[in-house]
Amino acid sequence: MGAHRTAFTFLSVLIPSWRFFDDLGAHPKVYIKLANERIWIEAFAPQPRRPWQLFFNPQGNLRLLSLSAFERLLHESQEHLSAPETFFSTTTYRLCLRILESEIRRRTLPLESVQFKICAYLSEESTLQDAFVSKVHRFDS
Image (cartoon, rainbow, N blue to C red; front, side, top):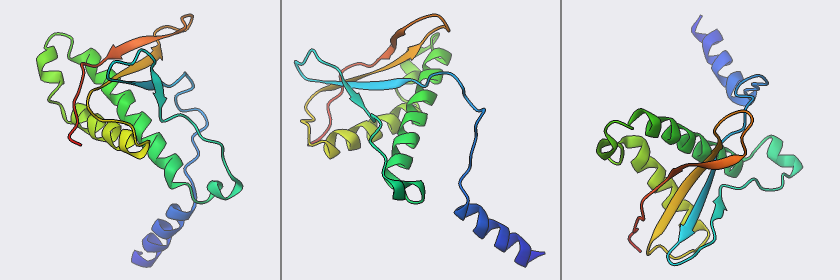
């Protein structure tokens, strides 16, 4: 039985997980704004795909992970409405800040003060709206 389990584990790594009917709604988008700027820049924007990325796509996987973390942060922000002071110390919030810092460094943007927001469709009939806007954060350079 152990050999079958090992073979199954090996094969499950090679075969992608296809979920066609999971989360049919629109996913939130994350935007960043640098110090004294008025323009919000989309973070984790989709990139053009190449044929080999069907089999090996670490940047695409990182993008999906990042968006999932910010989606979770949006859900947690709604859960902490009664005690917002505890929200900024949650693991998800701190993780999202580290992901954001990494994205800003990857783009070689200045780190002095950064703000982010999560936009989402708040109802089925609505347009994309600000669902969460962070306070200004400073990262070490």
